[in-house]
Image (cartoon, rainbow, N blue to C red; front, side, top):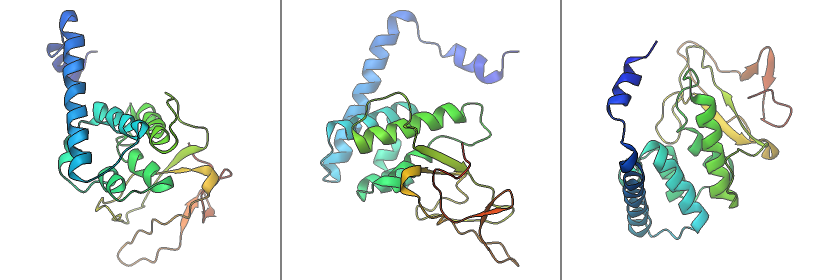
Length: 193
């Protein structure tokens, strides 16, 4: 069965002779937006950092470069690295219940790896992973103003602390659990995707 979305996208299909010029035109706009962003904010990006941001712009658009306070924009502007940057890329993978989430998450983690480590690979590194968060009726607002982020991505080798502390009226948060086992740090023994 063809979905309504599929039918709408099919109507927007680009003809064969228009594909390459359309792609080149869009990538030129992405490059111009990235250059304007770096100039306006006095950033000195390495080529691989620029390329990683160009890749994510290709997927999610480049409007976030111009306005907003989202996790990736803030992390880049503040010069964040490590798990903060990995998680900022991961917040652009969509929701875990999406059919495309796993593929998009792997892509976001590969882009974060490119940005951090000059690694041009289609695949995420084995030590990059994420956990899907269930707030059990509670809520949390991160430093970027996002309410209840659905994932937390990280580098297993750095054993980050679980710093997401939700609140729920009438309840006291006592910690994160994997089944019935408390989780204090995330490392290579933490069961996660």
